[in-house]
Length: 70
Image: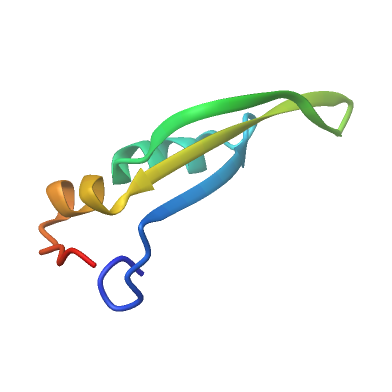
């Protein structure tokens, strides 16, 4: 997505009860950028919505992509 399609930013939303997905995105290098409190009610409880993001520069530094400037 960053290389071939030249995206500048990737954003992801994950519910706070989805701990495996939160751990995965942190391992991949996504930064937590925000939180929408009590965004969803499911199975008798409220979940926050965590907002994660990664820029092309962050991806390149972590995963070795050579970034060409537009």
